[in-house]
Amino acid sequence: MSILIDRNKRVVVQGMTGREGQARTRLMLDYGTQVVAGVTPGRGGQRVMGIPVFDTVSAAVAAVGAIDISVLFVPAKTVCSAAIDAIDAGVKLVVIVADRVPLWDAMTIAERAAERGAQFLGPNTLGVLSPGNAVAGMLGGRADSARQWFKPPLPKGVGIISRSGGMSSSTGYYLGQAGVRISTIVHVGGDAVLGVRIPDAALAFESDPQTEAIVVFGEIGSSQEEELAEMIRRKRVTKPVIAYIGGKAAKEGTRFSHAGAIIEGGRGTHAGKVTALREAGATVVDAFGELPSAVVSVLKAQGGRSLMSQSERDAVWTSAITKIAPNSVAVRGHDIASLMGETSFGAAVYLILSGTMPDVRVGKLMDAILVSSIDHGATPPSCLAARTVASTGASLSSSVAAGISAINRHHGGAIEDCARQLGAILARSTRDGVTLAAAAAAELADFKGRGERFSGFGHRIHSKDPRTAKLFELAAAAGVDGKHMAAARALESALSNTGKALPINVDGAIGAILADLGLEPRLFNGIFMIARTPGLVAHVIEEQTREKPMRRIDPERHAYDGPVL
Ligand SMILES: CC(C)(COP(=O)(O)OP(=O)(O)OC[C@H]1O[C@@H](n2cnc3c(N)ncnc32)[C@H](O)[C@@H]1OP(=O)(O)O)[C@@H](O)C(=O)NCCC(=O)NCCS
Image (cartoon, rainbow, N blue to C red; front, top):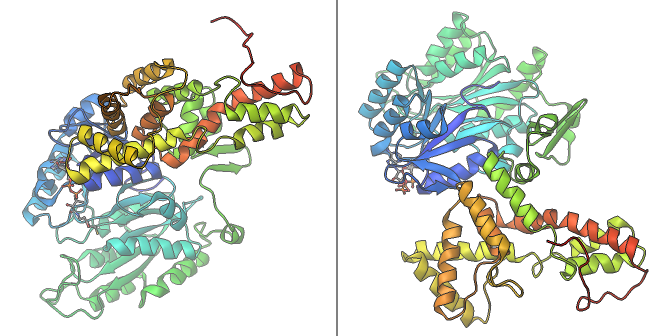
C-alpha cells in the first residue's frame, strides 16, 4: 500500500500534448505509472507515445473507462477549468503542478472537489511518488534516478510530507542513503490555498499499513504543522513524527520562497511550530542534516521494518528488472506465473525493456515485429557467421553468439538509424517551423550533400516489402500512428519527388513504429537480436546436422528446399 497513488491507479494527463506534458508523461510511464489517456482541448484524436488524447476528461472516461488520478500540466490560467473538467468526470485526485494559480481559482476548485468527494494536490506541487510503484507529477525526475534514490517499502517504509518541491526529493534521497525505505513521498505544494495539506497527508499515512513513521519537511507560515501537533496530542496521529522546519531566520512579513511561507500577525513562526510539535511528542531536528539519523534512531527504537538490512545497503549494484525471492519471481513488478499464459512474448519483451506493460494490441504489434525479423534466409552476415562457425565443430552457443556478434550498425542497425533520422526530421520541422514535407526534403538534401543515404528505405530484393504493409496494418489496429510514422511517409514522398521510388522497408517501418511506441532507439538493435535468435538457432542446428564440417559456405550458390509457400 501507499497513499494517494499506486501502480493500479489509472492516470490521465491534462495538457499531455504540451512541452512538459509530453516529457513528464514519458517519465511517469518509465517509472511504472499507468497513464491511460491524455486531454488537450482541440487535440482529440492525436496520440502521444501511443496514448490516446481526448478533448475533455469525460470523453477520455467514456473511451477508456474510469480514471482515478489526473495530473495537470496546463498553464495557471487554465488550471481551474481543467481541474473542474476532471472532477466532474469522476476523477478522485487532481494533481496541480502549475505555479501562480490565482487564489480564487484554487478556492473554486476546492469547493467543487468537496461537493464531488474529490481531492486535489497542489497547486504548485511536484506531485506524489510511491517508490517502486508509480509517480503522478514531476517528483524524482528521471525514472532511473528515482529508482536509485528512493528505496521501496519492503515490507515497510516511512511516509514523507514536504512543503518544498526540491526538498521532497532531497529528503527521500538522504533517507535512502541512510538505509530508510519509503512508502510514499507527497509534496503538498507551496501555495497559501492547498488541497491536500500536511494534516490530511498525515492522517492518510496513519491509516496506511505500510507506513511506520511520518517524516515532515515543514516551513514557516500557515498553520499546517500546528494542526499536525494538535492531531498528535489528540492521538489521531499515533505513528512517530520526525520533522524539520525551514525558515528559522525568516523575519515577520518576509515571504520565504513559497507563497504560503510567510509569518503574518505573529502566526506561523518557526519557534511556534517547533514548540507545538515537540510538546506534542514529535521529534524535531534543528538542522536538515540531522533528519536522516533522527529517523534511523526512531525506527531502531521501535524495531521498525523500514530500515534496509546491511546486505541490502552493501549491495554494490542494484537492478530494477527481476526480483527473485523464495517461491516468487517478479519481472518488472509482475508475477511471472501470472504473466505466463496471459502475456504474449512481444508484450513481455516490451515490458522487460521499457518497464511498462503494454496493452494487448501493442503486445500483438510487438509480436508481429519480432516475427517479421525472425529469419531472412542464409545470406545475411549473422547467418553466414553462425553457420560458418558451426561448421568448424563449435557449440550451439558459440555459433549463435558468432551470429549475434555480426548484428551491428550495418546489419540490423537500420532500425535504430532510421528512427534517429526520422527524429531529426521531426526536430527540424519544430525548430524551423516548417511542414514535415519541407523538413524531410531539407534533411534529404543534407544527406545527399554529405554523400550519405537514409536507412530504412528501399530493398535490394523487394520493391514492395510484404512485411511493411502488414506491420502498418497492425500498427493502425493498435492505434499507433505517431510522429515518426508521419515523418517516414514524408520522407518516402521526398524520395519519390527526387525521381527515386525507395519505399519504406521493414527496418524503416519497425524503427518508426518502435519510436512511436515511445521506446528508445538504443534498444532497437537489441530488439532485432531478440527477433533473429530463433532463426540463428535453427540455422546452426541445420548446419551441424546436415552439412559436412568445414564446408565452404557459398551465399551465391545456395538453394531453398523447405516447404512450398
Ligand atoms: C504547468 C506548466 C508545467 C506547463 O508548462 P508547458 O508544458 O511549458 O506549457 P505548454 O504551454 O507547452 O503546454 C500546455 C498544454 O496544455 C494545454 N492546455 C491548456 N489548457 C488546457 C486544458 N484546460 N486542459 C487540457 N490541456 C490544456 C495547452 O493547449 C498546451 O498543449 P499544446 O502545446 O499541445 O497546445 C507550467 O505552466 C508551469 O506552471 N511550470 C512551473 C511548474 C512548477 O515549477 N511547479 C512547482 C513545483 S515545486
